[in-house]
Length: 160
Image (tube, rainbow, N blue to C red; front, side, top):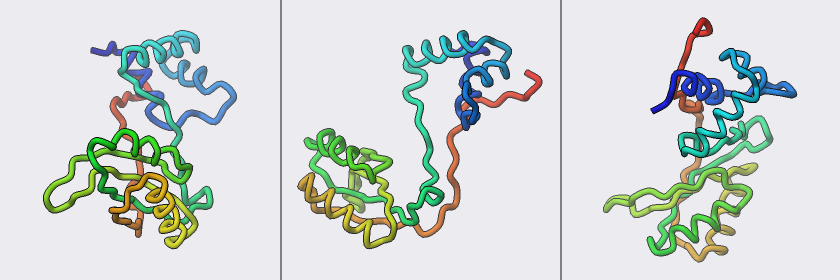
């Protein structure tokens, strides 16, 4: 169970960090606590497993990558962890997920890859396949981005 203050701290870090030299100081001021107290709360939330990680979201189109694809891989379940780690180590991979297959869709490991165009994505997928020994996969090219937002778990009015 989270306290109201912990919820307010989570609400501050679930979006973009301010682009200032001391972003946590600014976020702490929004909930009327010190920067030190704010960081200590974040550390405790991480230690408790409430917050698992902090990560940057790359807007790949703005950084020069104009193509991306989800690659669905069929991997022997006994190799999922090791293959997943190998695939995740590729710099072109930004996401790597294990999911349950079904009788209509046999794929169980998914990677999101980014590149300059569809032919470069095909080359990346072939390199990943060769490195991992996984040769059954499907490339699902992105055609249009419909939504890209982070999950917001708590929302508070500015007055709170």
